[in-house]
Image (tube, rainbow, N blue to C red; front, side, top):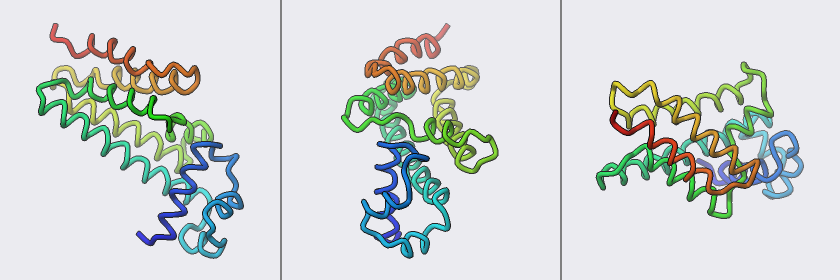
Length: 180
């Protein structure tokens, strides 16, 4: 990727995290990035395209991070599902937690047909797919329930400031993955 384009994405992502998608204007992104308007529109036809690019980058970051935690846990003989909650706990407590980009974007772009909303929903489905892959075949229907715990922990950490919510959700998730 071209350095200026990547710089725009990184700058915009930071601003969207801090201020939200609608509240962050193009002029602020340009001022913070030091990039000209012509350069911005060379890479992105609209602010919505820039938002989608930031979400695509964040999607890859999240999946890579969680997958690494899951793989390490499985190799150590531990639960891959529970490792997801450990990854969330680290995220909530690393000093750079601004809530979930995908929950926030889907709330600000609430029309279910808006490409930003659609991509946010696809990201959440990818997380459920990752969870499902860690469950025995006969328990795969529990993936949505565990996904609910993941999203609930994120919302609780963000809206109520309860940074231990991932550990609380992990305790609940153990119920779903224990053999009956």
